[in-house]
Each structure stands twice: as C-alpha cells, then as structure tokens.
Length: 131
Image (cartoon, rainbow, N blue to C red):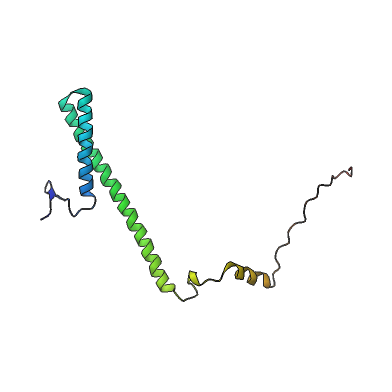
C-alpha cells in the first residue's frame, strides 16, 4: 500500500515528491533552529521553520520537475535521431554515406567553373615615386 501525504499526494509514485519532502524537512529544521538560536523566540522560529519547509519543498519540487522535463526532451530528440537513422540507412540521405570533403572539392574544381582568382599581393612601393 502506498504512503499518502495528507491523504492526497502519493509520495512513492509521484516523481520528485519524496526528495522534495525530505529537502523541505531539512530546510525547515535548519531555518527554524537557526532563527531560534539567533532570537530565542519560539513562535516566530516555528513560523520561519514552516516558511522554510514550504519554500524548500516547492523549490526542490520545481527544480526536479524541470530537470525531468529537460531529460524527456533530450530522450525524445535521441529517439527521433535513432528512428531517422533507421529510416535513412542505405539511402542517399544517409549522413554516414556522404563522400569525404576532398572528393567534393575535386568534383567542384573539375567542373566548368574556375575557382576565383586571388588578388595580387600588395607591394610596399610609395605612390609619389620617391624611393
């Protein structure tokens, strides 16, 4: 049977829930204890601890969910790449079947087009005729 937090959140089956709750507990303990040691006010320290729990839990939750979303996008891109490799393997569109760059240059220069001429080298002669 799964553990439910407040009867609504299934902690075992919800991604990032367990880690977020544990980080929140640590954050609340640290914030409340530090505030109590600094001020010796019990009620205010409890409030600071509760705020620390909420902020740490939500921050950890959103950070984990964003990382999971990025990971899913990367996996989808990789799966599409693998699917395209399988589809294009052995065809003209296969990127691994391309000729090397030297043979492409040889094909271009052997055609009717001539490569562009390079400009003449610059000389350092003065223009007014003095040497």
